[in-house]
Image (cartoon, rainbow, N blue to C red):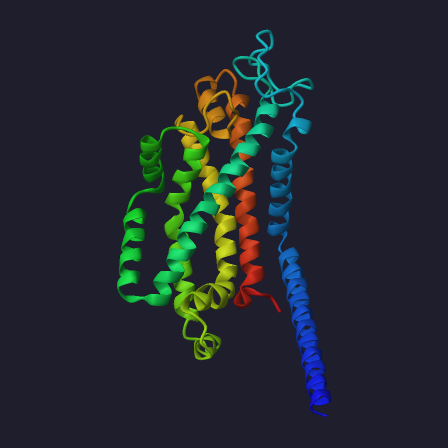
Amino acid sequence: MSTENNTQKQDTRADQEDLQRYIDSSRLSVRFSRFMRQLFRNRGAIFGLIVVAIVVACAVFSPLLAPYPPNEIDSINMLLPPSTEHLMGTDDIGRDILSRIIFGARISTIVGIVSIGIAMLLGIPLGVISGFYGGTADSIIMRIMDVLLSFPALVLALFIMAVLGPSAINAMIAIGVVYTPNFARLARANVLSIREMTFVEAARSIGFSQWHIMFREILPNSIAPLIVQASLGVAYAILMEAALGFLGLGVQPPTPSWGSMLSEGRVLLKLAPWYSTFPGLAIFFTVLALNLFGDGLREALDPRLKQA
C-alpha cells in the first residue's frame, strides 16, 4: 500500500513539475512576443537594426562583398572620384575605398563587441559584489571606479595604449578598461534596488549561498538595463576605436580601419573629399544605428516606458 502511495506522490510531483515548466515557458513566450511587438513599434529601432545587420553582414562576408582586395595598389588609378568602376573612388595609392570600408567594418565590429565584452566581464561582477556586500568592499570598488571616471575617456585610452603599444588587441583592452566603470556603477545600482526584495529574502531563508543569490537570483533580474548599456556601449567603443585609429594608435596599416582612413584622407580633403567622407559616413551611420537600436531596446525592456 505504501509503495502505491509513494508511486502516486511521485507521479503527482512529476505532473506538477511538468505543469510548472509549461507555465514558465508560456510566460516566457508571452514576454518575448510583447518585447518584439514593442520593439518593432519603434521605427528608429527598426532602422537601427537594419543598418546594424548590414554592418555585421559586411564584417562577416567582407571577402565576398568587397569588389576588390582591400590592399590592392593600383598606381594608375590613384585618387579617382566615385565612378561605376569604383563606387566610392580610390585613395592616394589606388586602393578601392568601398572595399576598404567593407573590410573596415570587420575591425570596428570586432573591436566594439570584444571591448564591451571585456568591460562587462570586469564591471558587472565588481558592481554586483559592491552593491550586495556594501561597506568596505563597496567603498574600495567604487573609489577605483571613480578614479577611472575622473579621466576623460580618450585620455585614459591613450595612456593605456601608450603603455601597451598600438595594436588591435591592445585597443580592445584599453576601450574595455575605459568603459568598465559604466557597467560597474549600473550593476551596483540595480543590485541596491533588488537585494531587499522578497524573492531575495526567500533565497536567503532557504539557505542559498551568497554567491548563488548574487549571480543566480539578483543578476538575472537586473540584466535588461545591462543589455541596453551594452548596445549603446558598442557604439561608443566604435567611436573610440576610430579616434585611436585616427591618432595612429589603433589598428596598424595596411589593415583597413575607418579611423585610419579618416586620418589618411584629411591631408587630401580639398583634392579628394571622398577619401574621408565615406569612412566618416560609415562611422556616423553605424553609431547612429546602434544608438537608435539601444533606445528601442530600452523602451521595450523597461515596463515604465511601454506604450499601452
